[in-house]
Length: 431
Image 1 (cartoon, rainbow, N blue to C red):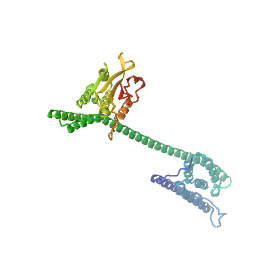
Image 2: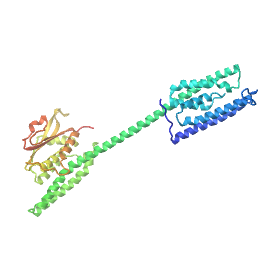
Image 3: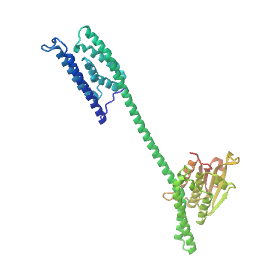
Image 4: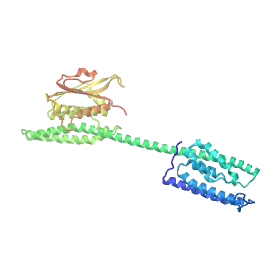
């Protein structure tokens, strides 16, 4: 386990001060109790002339206690393994083991791990071996004291080392949990940001698909009022009424956008019906576009039986295909074929299942391509993405080449025509 520097936070400093203050208080009490024991000694000192034996021993006890407390300060503030070992050696020389010894053993376990247990045992053995220097007992009593001293302090020191290891493991676990919580929070924020970006993209596509068609019709009618001078008052009122209706419909569509985007059923009130498609065709015809509509025999029933999102996608596909034909086509009639693609097997009622609703738009192309207006040219791209999200597909056949799906290749037109085919699943993907 690598050395882990002690945190310099205010909380860590308060803990350090508290531990050192507690150790100093216990050391003072031990020093006063030791004085009573040393006063019982008799005889002079053989080391320092003029001093009693107990005075020399007590002076050594006090100096060692003070040294252990002073060395404990840098040990608590940072990784100092050598100073910690020195405290263990010095703190066991007096007759009463210093509390700084147990604190230092705990710190060693926290910073160095359980692998330092043999080193602590050796340091403790050295300290206990030097304890006769300050031991009041002599002869056989001294040997018994050293043995008892070693047996009583060894388990305590080992327990302190293991306590430090457990404290370090708990700290690592807390740090790991904190990192994991930050990672989860960051991941969640990234997912929320991604979800918001996707929702903004969906709203952008929805606004383009729903409003671009009606706004283009408004622009067409307004251009007719501006350029044509042969209109009587009745025709002007009719065109103005169409502009008013289209503007109102655009506002209604705008209010329905958010409801339609919800996948939880809250947008059921905005589900499209076949009358909405017929209304789109009527607006196109009022604007002067000739639409040649061909419906399969079971188209209307299949359309009404499809789910809300699929019907809404068909409505948007019809609007976009007709808008694209009017903007970029060569004029003339636009052929709109609505077909039903059968499923491989029967449905739940035993009848022929419906796999997809197919809308196919064919219009003549001008001799030279028309320039795309700024901000335009994204209608088919948006429709392709909408169908892809539903599990459908969009095929575009340019003049001079065909890109229709292989299973629908028989529907390709001549090279002078622009063909767009949208296949919408009758049942959208389930969430």
